[in-house]
Length: 108
Length: 122
Image 1 (cartoon, rainbow over the protein chains, first blue to last red):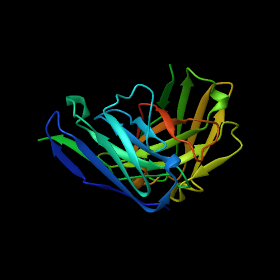
Image 2: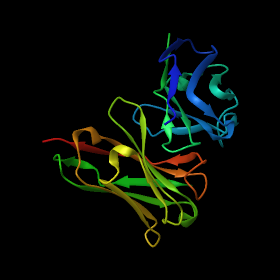
Image 3: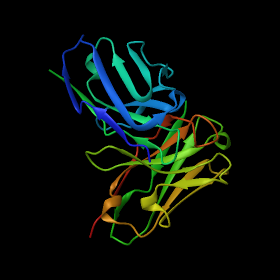
Image 4: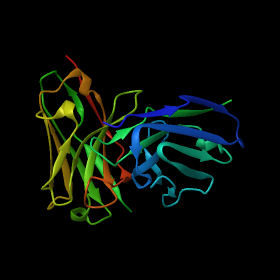
């Protein structure tokens, strides 16, 4: 099983600042099998990024993904009020599919 | 517009059974794989099970193998999760999620339902 470790667990920033969320895999994951999801309170997760760097339909360009091998990142260039929530990374290269534990972006 | 609507959750005693449903609309049901993902209250996401577009192939996380069964009915555009021998640790919100293609490996979840809560308690 590929274990995904997200850091930091909590990220305190102000609106307009840049956020960088990290996800480290216990073994190498091909870029094309890596995704990021956003989950707001009381809602289902929403796909942000797939293939490590491809924005899903309707996702603003302030969201970007990068990385390869065991280290991936999600960057939010300028935080908007609606971006303060929880983010999960996921690998879909091998079964079982696994998610990271999440990073909560909170208002400083 | 893709819609996935889960139902069937509720309170059940340990050892009991429930059947969850995921009613799909807004896309060609028989062309896409579907998964169940759960989330214990206040916790992270955990993949539970997947079924291919054809329904011929399924996969489960180890903790539910032999207890849960996933299947789909193309006449009703619905995917089901039959859950038997339920345990307290199965308590969670259960989401169904649509894959980006007909196969459940090497593909991402592009749409999610709103979830249904399963509580296993005496």
